[in-house]
Structures are given as C-alpha cells and as structure tokens.
Image (tube, rainbow, N blue to C red; front, side):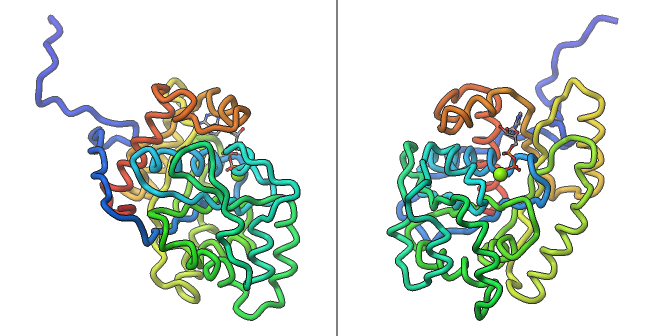
Length: 289
Ligand code: ADP
Ligand code: MG
C-alpha cells in the first residue's frame, strides 16, 4: 500500500509517550523578583544535576529572567562550569558560618548576562560539621537566600550527591525540587529514599515544598535500554516526568571544559534546544514565572 501523506492532525509523540509540545516562549517580565527557589537534587552523582543547573539557568537568563545559580557542592563543578575560579574568594561557606555577612558580597556575575553565581569550593565540605551544632541548622541556607530572593526571578541550587545536612538545607530553602535521572541501569535505585527525604522535609521543615518534576537525562533513543529505562521512569512517576528529555551528547563534557553554558557555546545544538524547551515547560507548568 502506498504510504499516505502526513495528516495535518497527526499527533507526534515525544519520548515520554505523550503528545509533543514545543511550549510557547515565556512572556517578558516587566519587573523582577521575588525568586522562586528550585533545588536540583539526587543523591546519585553523575546524573546531570550540575549540567542541568548551568544550562537551565542560562536558558532562563536568555528569556530575560534574572537568575542566581547556587553552587552547593564542595566539588565546585557549577562554579567551574560557569567559568568562575573559586580559590581565595569568598564562597557560600562563608555565608553559612557567618550569618551576619552580606550575601551580596559573595555573589559574582558570570559571562552570561542575567546569570549570577554564589560560588563554592572545597571549604563547603567543612560546613556540615560546622552546622551540626547550630540552632535551626536546617534553615541556614534559607536565611541566606531570602536576602537575595527579592532581586531574582529564579534561584537554582545545585546540590551535592548526598542526602545530608547540606541537601536538607537546600530542600528547606526551596519552593520546588527538580530531580534529574540518568537513563541508565539503576536510575530508580535510591529514588524512593530521595522521595522519603523530600516528604520528611515537607512534614517537618518546609510544608510548601513541591516536587516540580523528574527530568530524564542522557537519553539515547537508539538504544533499547535507554527507551526501557525512560518507560520505567514514566510508569513510576507519570506526569511528574517532564516531557522534555535531555539526550546524551559529548557536547556537555565539551561545554564544561569551556566554562560556558552550551546555550551560549552551541545554541543550535539539540541539547541546548532541549534545555531551552525545559525552561519553557517549567513556565508552562506554572513552576517558574
Ligand atoms: P551531577 O552534577 O549529577 O554529578 P553532571 O551534570 O556533573 O552530574 O554530569 C556528569 C557528567 O556527565 C559530566 O561529565 C557531564 O559533562 C556529563 N553529562 C551531563 N549531561 C550529559 C548528557 N546529556 N550527555 C552526555 N554527557 C552528559
Ligand atoms: Mg554536580
């Protein structure tokens, strides 16, 4: 039988099995702030938290949003990925241990217009020990960020791969949490524990914390394995899984080395387009203004 022409009402499905939407370009904002604070969280390393923080932050900045990226991992990969050197400079650690300090003194601009950074370095690994004996030790980051929130539209916190006190601080400070999941073996291993931690924080510390969504990363549509893992993720979390899926590409390791977001470095690349689309999807869902 001859192949029929594509019908105009044909529905194209995205990789999550839902109809594909491009999502509209977010409207311009007339004024800025107060920020919605979103923590990128998964206690597994190497799932795309930092890559997503950098590129989602840059995507929102390109849509005219004022964005603050918070490096909350002592490895400092977010700072490095945004081209900011962190030895011998004040960092988020200094704000956590001295709450009288003005956080504005620690914020640095990045090469991307509209995107600022609160840097971190290895000093942050000492913060956990330091905070243990503090009063309201889970709320310290929240206090720091409340002083910065009026000037930004969005604050993204790049968490370290653990569910310790720093991550609990991030979840306590946040309005929403975004969970990147690598489309690989064991993607869902540990997610139950993460969800339990989020629920504990909701119960005890931050009742308004919302799970904004799960983001499938490093998806390779050519492999059955990747498709099966994504299917499992969607079966487990349904509509909480973003329709936008981030493909696996060597452009990310390249971009990390160059110290600039992929959307500045290769804006037409499908992975850059995917992060721009994720930003639009978050606005479409009402998760970010
Ligand atoms: P996390 O912050 O969760 O540890 P990263 O964002 O640092 O994860 O990513 C881990 C590694 O995988 C980095 O080397 C990064 O460049 C690479 N990476 C991230 N996203 C992708 C992707 N979509 N495709 C290929 N490599 C990626
Ligand atoms: Mg990281």
